[in-house]
Image 1 (cartoon, rainbow, N blue to C red):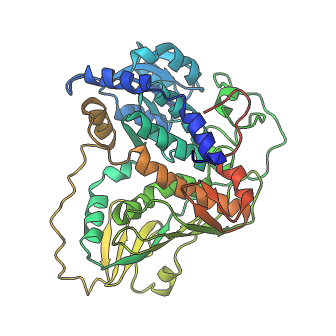
Image 2: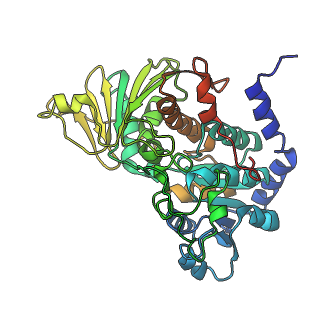
Image 3: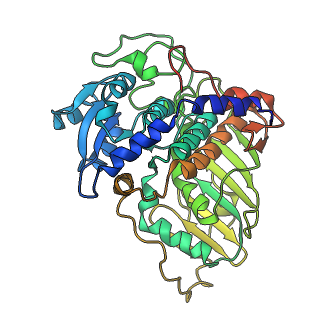
Length: 433
């Protein structure tokens, strides 16, 4: 018998709880639904970003709503008076899992995986906000679980459904700028927590602070964490990289068919043990994919941008955020809604290829229809798990202060044992995957 590595053993043990009963249960419920019937949904996190996700699935039957903050969720609770209300998603799923088909997760990053894993183990289709998870190990486990259970999954990268990304993918794959071996991706986002506050104000009425912390180590409540600033703290987010990599790097991942990098090297502002970075630059190397050449992808946030933009100020638009593909025949610059072939004079008479990627029916709607019909989604957890892993590896390299030689199959940095604590951080007692 093949000897299992520690990581393989951990993954197989975690997946052991996903039995065939879960697959059968999900399939039976899906088979009972016609495309004209409504899904029975539970929504975990229904204030803030979660409220937007709730709006995206509002045409379905909302069976249950869960949020740790009654004040933030008050409007959503009011809109669905007949839905079961709950603060602890574990209790909610345990009680009503037989009444639902699928789960929508719009919580902060550090609770994505615990909620998603429990939902999928119970045989429920899953829509989850980006990034898919808070750690690399969680992303791999979520993807493997989705593949094993054959459930319908979708990451909340809503820009993926826009027409602009589709036209960019078609241009790149049609060879408009030739073979692409270099990509620059940047966002001006910056989330910095600072030093942990010493004062301990009372927890506001209506907020279940211990449940909000979830699997993160306990710390006293402070408004510098919730409801808006949690992305600036390592225990809950991954700064600008965690917030925007999955939106912008989604475009080169899609267009160039990227999966797992082999090398990741990050630099940035001085590393703080608790607070996320002020700025970061991450250099990724991706191997060749069939006939496609290796790719160097560089990420920038916190105000940093490609030096190429500075060097070519007279010829390149100075966008605050975007994606720049560098090919053998030219460049393509894009963001959520715009695209440009460069240099403009060279491509003045260029005729783009006829559209081949159908327009989306809507990012949430795509998932809903797939739950009912068994069809595909474009940001399933297999695709978005790899996308999320790449994002979070940037944080791992930055926090260790070392470039990583990445073995994706073994889920380990072969040259840096210290990376393990960030690849698979521990959970607080009482919380598991």
